[in-house]
Length: 203
Length: 198
Length: 191
Image (cartoon, rainbow over all chains, first blue to last red; front, side, top):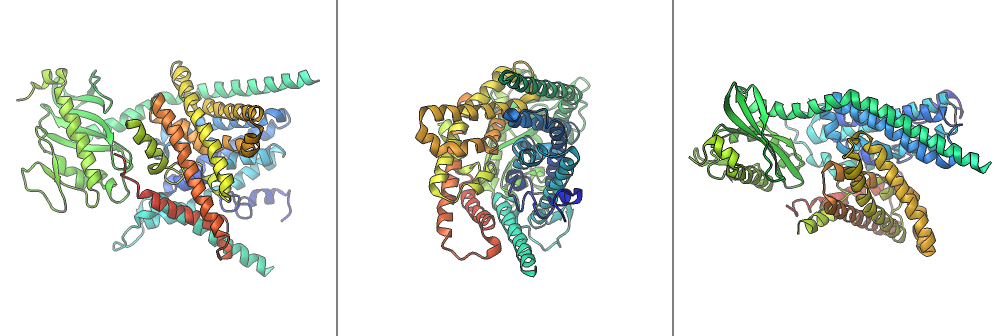
């Protein structure tokens, strides 16, 4: 795949430049809200929405915003969308918004979003920037889905709240506590590393 | 040239901020009402569960200390059928927020619901479970409620069985209930309504 | 007394990095060398203390008074960004050596979620001025503690034989997990 083609800009975020596994961005929400799948998924959707909307606006305004105030402009735009998502969740999904707590407003400083604006949306066309945002959002979503699935299945014996483990299984409480989050993500990075290594040897 | 650059900076930043403020004002006007309803609903749902006969919960205009967040009077028609206390206190890990329901004379517990807690998952946070909470129904609050570990307490002992491997969480929870209710009963306005210590 | 307990709570029991997952990005990024970790920690502690005061004041004197809570997030992040900018200019002017030590970390602090997290938590928990300030200082010191401990371990780790795929972030996360496990032993220390 060539750099600059629409397919490339979309798909790079999912595997090759995955925001979590490769760029190690947006770690705080990744670790904090993934004790259940529903929270992980809600966080990923909220962050992706903010990312896509901000990329859309910022790439359309890229010629108007002077570079000396670009960071300030970016964070105002991002913070506006985050407030929007936060109010929406509080109004229509109160329970989810309560369990995500301060991590919804913390999307503002999620480095994935500001990082993509600085590195991509402020330099590329609207179409490419939105594709890039969708790709990064998808990569973020998939990583959170896997991480939260592992944690919920072992930590509660459930997946999306549905019992999946047999009755004799005793939940590993540690998986839903802080250490479990670090361990699971560490192992995920290791597994990703193994795939990468195999691929580079094969070539 | 330099002036126009500065001017552009100011104009762009100002217009972005104004647009942002304006759009948020719209969002606020649409969602504010709904958010307040949700907050109240979470509380009322808990009260309603413990006092299903009540048709209204009126918030009392009483300020005592910060641990007693609110006092609700549960009424059916004109008669008071119970009380709801929104309480807060320290738990093992972080703050615990609960609503406790008591009968009309504040002598017996009707139960409690956990609004917020961060106790150890799988141990202390079992306080949310129905099995643990149902023990509180009917306990006397004229004396303090106690607990025993690892077995069911005798009937009439006014004790509960502690959460297994979470004695501290149990103790802190009981502290919140016992101490605050004792303070509530000392409030003059409440005394007038319930007829004091009888 | 209550303030001392609150302080200890945010340094160890409710450590920002290890139990609340705030500021994990710099925790992974700037924990290779002890000196760098210590400087970063100092810069963060400093900014956190000022942020605690500034965000508390803005929240209570401006936002709440005029019913502008909806603008909370936008205003907080702007306050933090301008504070960081001010601190940077101030340090540059007053103490060039300190600027050389801290300089490169200062811009990173704007996007450190520990700072915005602090401002949000103070507002969420409705802390008063002193409690907020103690939380800022305690949180900053807790962050420094976690960062320096991790840097110490990672310096030793350079001599260890780690499987190729786990090198770098992978092993760091596993160690962070073990540290979090250790720190979770402090739970219940403070009533």
